[in-house]
Structures are given as C-alpha cells and as structure tokens.
Image (cartoon, rainbow, N blue to C red; front, side, top):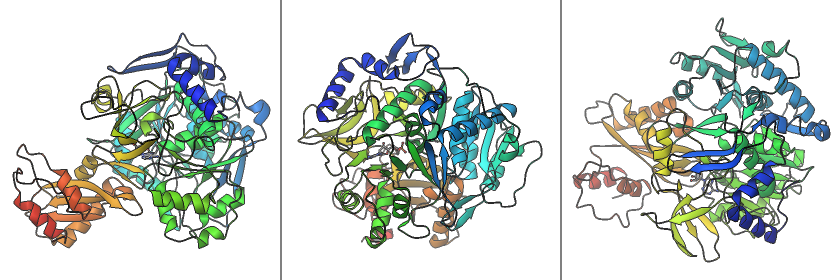
Length: 633
Ligand code: WT7
C-alpha cells in the first residue's frame, strides 16, 4: 500500500519532511488519488479568521476514489462484513462491486426524491450496511450528510435537523440493540413535529415493526431503489465542498456542527488508517464504534474503504447475548485489527478472562483504543488478555474536529508505552502551551495541547456560525488550534493525554457539555438553578453528577432526583442521564456570581482533600451543606 511507513527511521524521515515542506509532503500523497482536475495551490491558511483551504480549486468525487479507482482490482474483494445483533442471523459479506451498485442505486434514489448537491441529509440509522451506503450515496451526489447517533432523543434530533436545515431524514422502522427493539421511526416522527425543512423521510425495514408512514413524506427504502439503475455518474466536487457535518458538544451552548470538506478529509483518513493500523491487503479490520460518531465516519467507512480494506460492521452491543460477543466475532471472522474504546474494555474486564478464553484470538495483529484516556490497568488488561502480550496497542488521540487520528503509535513501529498516545502522525504539529500561551519546550512538561499548523482533515467551520468556530478553537491562543485537552510530554518525549481542561465531560467516550446537561435539567419546572460536573467513574471514565436547587418544590428530593434523571434522558438521550442528582439549597459562587465548579467536582469525586480556599465565596456556608448532603461529612 502506498505511503505506508515501514519502520521508526522511516517515520522520523516522513515526519521531518512533513514539517519542513508540508505542501510537498501532502501533494505527493494527494497524487495517489484520482482527480478530475488538479489543484491550483496545496494549502492556503490563516488561523485568525480562520480560513483553511487544501488543494484549492481541484475537482474530484471521493467515492470515485473508492469505486472507480479500486474496482479493477477489488471488485470481488469483501468491502464490508456485517455482523447482526442477533447471533441466530447470518453475517453478510458485501464486495466492493456490490457496494458500488448499492451506492449508485441509492444515489439515484436520493436524486429522484429531490436531493441536490449541497442539500443536507440526516442519517439516523442503526449499524447496518445501508447506513454506509447512505453516507456514500450522499457523497456520490454531493449532498452533505449529517449522521445523528440513533440513541439521541427526538429533541436532540430536531435541534440538529433545524440547525442544518435538513431536507431529508434517513431512518429505519426500528433498531435492534441487545435484547431491545428501539422504535426509532417514532422518534423521527416526534422530532419532525418541531421542524419544517424536511420534505422526505426514507425508512429502511429492519425490525418489521408496525410504523406509521406519513403520506407524501415517508417512503420505504426498498421502494425508492426498486427501479433505480445501479450505475451513477458522480457529481463533480471541489476540494473544499462540504462532505459532512457532525454535531458534537462543547463547553457552552448547544452542540455545534463540525464541518468537514472533501479532499483533505479523504487524503488524511486514508493515510492515517493505513499507517496507524498498518493494514495489509487481506486483513480483516474491525472498529466497534457507531457510525454516529467521528470514529465510525473515519475508521469504519471512509479510511478503510479508501484503502480497499475489509471493514467489519457490528450491529449489536458488547455484552449481548454474552460478555464474550466481541471475542466470538473476532474468532468467527478472523479479525486482524481490532479498535475499540476504553469504556468497553473496562466493562468487559469486569467479567474476567473466562469469556475471553473461550475464543481463539490468534488472528489479532493490532489492537487499538480511542475516545478517552485509557488508564494503565485497562491498558494492561487489554494488552495481555486480548493482545496476548504480542499485539501492538495503538492509543489513538484525536477529535471530531480533527477528522482523523493525530497522535498515536504506529502499530509495531512506535515502541509501546502504556497509556501514552505517544507521537504525532506525519503532518501533525502539536505544541504544549501554558495558560498564557507560552510554548513549553523540552521534555517533562505539562500544559494545554494545541496544534500550530494546519492538517488536511481539520475542521473548517461550525455550520452556520463561523464566529463560534473562531471563538472555540482559535481564540484561546493566538495563531493556534486549541484542542481543549491537557497533555504531558514525558522524559522520552512521548505524549500522554490528560483529559479535558474545559467544561466538557467524557462519558463512555461520548462528549457532553456540562451546559447542555444543565439546560436540560433547568427545563424541570421546579429547578431554579443547576450545575453539572464530571467525576471519575470506574467503567465510564467519567460519570455525570448534577446539583440542583429546587427551593419551592413540594416534591421529595428522591422524586425530584428521579424526575430530573428521566428529563435529561428524554431531552438529550440515555447517554446523558446523570448518575447522581443532589438537591441543594444553593451553589457555591464567587463574588462575581460564577459557580465554583472546582468545589463541586471535589464533592462529586468524593475527595475533599485540597478543597482550596472557600472563604472568598459569596456563600461559603453552602459548601458544608453540600458536603453533608453528599454523605461526606
Ligand atoms: C475528545 C474528543 C476521536 C474520536 C472519539 C472521540 C478525548 C479521544 C483519546 C485518547 C485520551 C482521548 C479527548 C478529546 N480523547 N481519544 N486516545 N486519549 N483522550 O471524539 O467525541 O470528538 O472527543 O476525546 O478529550 O478531546 P470526540
């Protein structure tokens, strides 16, 4: 495979070249792809506006680099192995040739139903091959997809539809998740009552549940493709045309639509995929993420398919019908690269090694981790019991905004160091800064992680609100992209990510803004004010702890707690439901009225050491009450 780094010296060379002459470095990789028209300029950038343009004015279609480019050699190669939720159902293999036809058919169907280049299409679907087909069909016709995780609530879905003014929603009649059937079509129906831009809803039959089909709006997926041809002339896209929008949480306000564009994202996901995982031609690669997250976009769909890989898609959950399900799938499909999240590892660790030992994991060559800092215990458990001590473990640090893996070992090349994301990929220039933005040079330093030079798959804007993009990422430190993460460079120069330094919490690898959860809690009629913090949680990495003032309420604290939990579940989705809700009479505030979250974090973490000076608070007396209320006195 072209551009695959072979050894550490190779890495050092490539890295060096990528920093000394980034434009030459990336244009050489870009030359590997199929373009309809080449670029005028490799890179134009300014981090103040911010304005970033890679491969300016070039023309291409990303899907032609999966299909037209690869079909001569890959027509009969398996593109997708799909493992259904239910163990009694058969797995399905789809070749590149079949995937192409399915993509073309659906691309034609989308156009027949009125979708045009630039229109936004929401994908709210289960982990089935049709979800991948939907993404590729959008890319084929130049529509902008926005995948919304199918566990999100009707309100969350409606917010996203409204923010991007989606013209269409793709969904299913229902989703299987472990032993549950989730009525997602009903969620879509509820969401669409609060929106007015959606003209058509295409519904995939999955569970066979009875669903209501709204006349003139709802269509069955199989009907839409029935008479469509299986060839399609790809839309001509410019490098910087939008490929997709993906919503993610920040420290303030509602989730924002991170915008990724065509050429840079294509090049970077391909390059990072083959190098981090050291994918070889006949390998079977499996990433357990959901396509509703960036990991699914870049490393189930785009990166692997651009590399001509066989990518496995799993519909179910790690513990159904038994806690050895992941390992059963690894054995069944002889998986070579396995990529999952620390939260899944920790959840499975609880079941001990018996479910692991039942299965033959000898096919594994590389194991990976993503989404949150992996603690050393989980790292070792994963390395020893799944990797049997001889698979390199790639701890990959990146973000929705970065589009692809930024800091990670390259499997089998970078020496493994537990819990260290280690070294930047070629083309990535991290910088550690102190609170004032001064660069911290040398080893044994700790500070905030920024990136000082553009990379091809970086965020271009936040949809419909460029100022927000500038304020969030490019204003904290002038001339740099600020990640929101803390980082340490150790005595060997290896990087260790320390977690978020802002008000973003990471629950089971899912990003949540404290403000977002607080807004949901404040919807409760009895809540006067609330504050949400994260605290260390054994399985989830972080749990959500909410404090709420409900002075005038006639309800018992127990009832209020339960109602608040259910309300957040309803407004955002089950992943945002607080673990703890504590009813309080006040929140600790500074004299300027700012909530002292530091103190709340201490209480939530059940660690009252170094509580700090509380005498400067406006209301120091509430601290005692909160400590008592938490049962910590
Ligand atoms: C945040 C981004 C990248 C896809 C999944 C999450 C945390 C991610 C790691 C890692 C330590 C990590 C960071 C980051 N994070 N990977 N290997 N080690 N922390 O994407 O939802 O945009 O979240 O996840 O805090 O900022 P996301």
